View 1 (cartoon, rainbow, N blue to C red):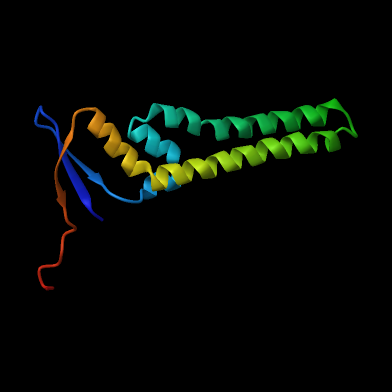
View 2: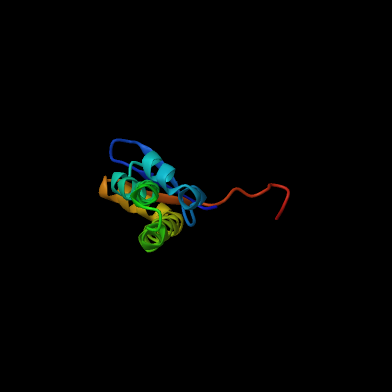
Length: 126
């Protein structure tokens, strides 16, 4: 994987990966928290909260009446589908665009490109 080096005017060096982010794809909540993308982290909590709403809605429907479960199936399914779709969208955004978002954030904070470090090659190969 190609690493991109960026430096700040105060001498700090930042190395970022280019391309796909497996951590961002598999766990967008953790990726957003580790990289201090608080808006994405807050949005990533919405599927978790929607799952809690689904559980509460199920409990309410169970207590409200004996034949009322059929009327609650559609709202519960809708909330569950929204939660899954939002989670999949976050996985795609953080996986495919995650490293690019980190690079844009670094440029906004004053980092500049110094060079593109190539992947290390085995010295025994040509």
